[in-house]
Amino acid sequence: MRGPQAPEYIRKLAVYVPGRPIEEVQRELGVSDIVKLASNENPLGTSPKALIAIQKAMATVHRYPDGGGFALRKAIAARHGVDIEQVILGNGSCELLEMLARAYLADGDEAVISQQSFVMYEIAVDQVNGRPIAVPCATGRRHDLDAMAAAVTEHTKLVYVANPCNPTGTYNTRAELDRLIASVGERAIVVLDQAYQEYVDRPDYPDGLADLKAGRNVIVLRTFSKIFGLAGLRIGYGLGSVDVIATLNRVRSPFNTSSLAQAAALGALDDDDWMDRSRDHNLAELRFLERELTRRGVRFTPSVTNFVLIELEGDVREMFVEFQKRGVIIRPVSGPGLAGCARVSVGTRAENERFLTALDALVPSSVA
Image (cartoon, rainbow, N blue to C red):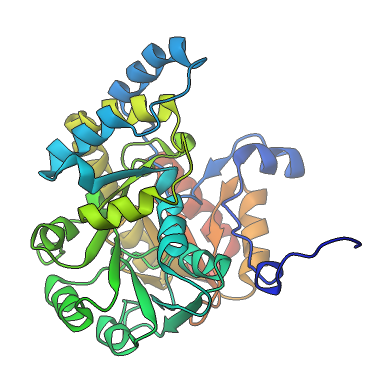
């Protein structure tokens, strides 16, 4: 290719590969009845209050959105008991991960991550020519927070903690997080990615808001994509100190969240009934899936989220295609310690049974 070349660190970037959409599989394989269990979406759909808000907002889509998202940030601040200046909106929480890297990392600056965690952490760091420091997991595919704390050096600016973790479905306890934050101190910002927080049903699970309110050096990331069912509108938010949020606003794109996304999120935020229903459904179906996997002898990592990481025999990519031929989309994963693993979202009972039927056809030895 003639002409200017992108810097080498850009040319070497990994490309994030999303879960395959239903329409693409239908076109490729000619399968009409598709169950998508690849992207951890809410199988019950979208908050009804959010849908009403979207309809009302349709009349003003010819106008630019509120660039600062004032109404939504005010509602988020009130819900969580923080100042509005401690809230920032993002085009999904992924954009916030990238904002943090742009704002705090220069060439060669380090960010500590867990080896088996959300791939976007490493991509965000690589995008700015930072240096991701990947720390091996503890037993049970959990973040080894003590080892991550020990990996922090004078060059570390960020520590990305997925709690709960995607793709493993695991979590770290309050005691473990306290040790990490105490060890890191003011040397780096601890990024608490809590995209799946609403699904967790464990008494020792730590809500990062408590750390923020205690004045600890953290930023808490949340999303409307999961339990609220707004994945298609791409909206999330961050909660941090006034200084950190002000810094992120310096690298935030103008109008980074749409008027429809803001309106929908504002409606969803007020829909506790929907969140409770979605949480209860997920917990019941997660238990069903894990029980059935156990009965079949299929190995999996116990989860606190709306997905399960399973271990398959043989080539997981080939299995991925075979599942699609049977009308079920799952998500292969890769990385150290994840060979042969796939992530399966918790669906409706009918969708979960479709997955189990396909599993039985592909792994006959698993049938009880």
